[in-house]
Amino acid sequence: MWDLQTLADVEEIKKTKARYCRFVDTREWAQLRKLFTDDCRFVIAGNSQSVEEFISLARRWLGNSTSVHSVSMPEVEVTGATEATAIWGMEDIVSFPAEGDQPLKGIHGWGHYHEEYRREGGHWLISSLTLTRLRLDSLPGGFPDA
Image 1: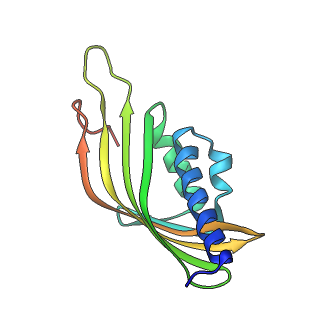
Image 2 (image 1 turned 90 degrees about the vertical axis):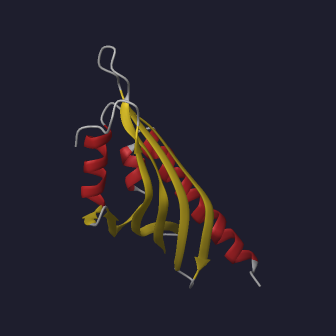
């Protein structure tokens, strides 16, 4: 049975993840950084990165694209007073401006975020993020250049 504090914690974790998606898509990098612990690790495509490396790479790669990140089906488990885990179903679309009469380049993907959270300074922050892809399709113009 969950108590009111656990329910409040789960709701704050959901808001943290919603902000993650919004801040990536609106390119609010400083706000995005505030969602992570200083020692947060990211594992994407088998590569482990620090929070600074992740944000720098995302900023460069997304460049002048339009992106839409969406998460659903949260499986949030509060495992202690300051620890929690979550698995989120995810979908993202990233499209890059067309060149001339060429179709849009980009990706459309699905998968899961596997995350750990830690409460610091009264807020739930992401302390570990691993993205696993189930499917990754190109838009009609093909995959974007790396």
